[in-house]
Length: 310
Ligand code: GUN
Image 1 (tube, protein in one colour):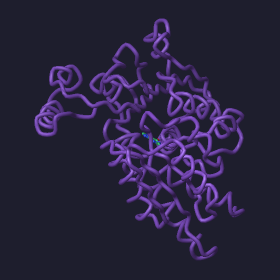
Image 2 (image 1 turned 180 degrees about the vertical axis):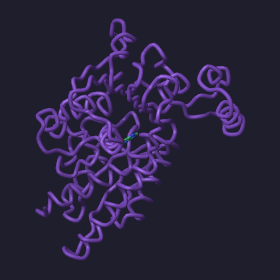
Image 3 (image 1 turned 180 degrees about the horizontal axis):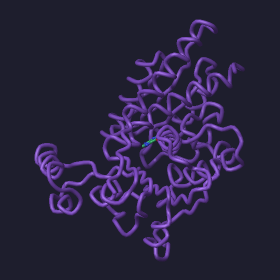
Image 4 (image 1 turned 120 degrees about the vertical axis):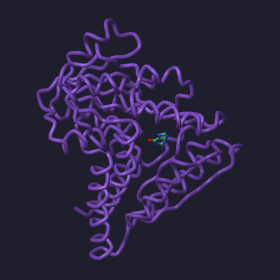
């Protein structure tokens, strides 16, 4: 079998267009645009790129935004005070504090202070609890994007065996809750799981979120499975690439390492997935493209709920 490639770009664009027209309606009918506040602390280069992309997307879709960039030495109390002021600012609908935070900051305390109604990352314990009870909540963006890819690609979730490899708070656990809500039979595998390949190989839907380049191979994949690769790993050693790609893509990857020093590789061995799966999300170009679209979705949903608009 040759897997159908599930390209994230057209799905992300379709969602963004839907949100853009919703925002135009909110402006016209209700006279406001949802506002996202983004907070970045320090100078992590990846965070600078992510935050830049998030802010550009707000502009593209017609949301308003507030950006706070604080120095790396910012004290915990200072960041708490900023979050509190954003909680109290009635114009702000969504608050996102970009992770990772510098070590002097108490990450849990910051995330717990964010008003759950404005928690567009869906990381607050109130939203985590609501999600686990199947109640209305703001849902973490990456797993929400996976559900959109599955639904919009016509992949049946209800009744399927879904296996998630990875148990992080940002992806693995909320992914399990969302798939359960969609009536899948859900298994979570992790570093202590016994005989992981045989469990993964029973999956109709296999979600990889472990942070190990090319970790899931042919023996983890059932024939015809939908394989969703959430991993984004930087690989700079050309010998690691030889096992994962061949032909034109191998040439391209080696050239990227030569020019940029690294290439981005998923948690799934792409060659194996294409040979054995029924459908496969590539890295880059798959799930990652949905994350920002879902952040915008959450910001609009938060704005409507806070302001009592259906
Ligand atoms: N850093 C990497 N991914 C994320 C995310 O989804 N949300 C936040 N706040 N920070 C991140």
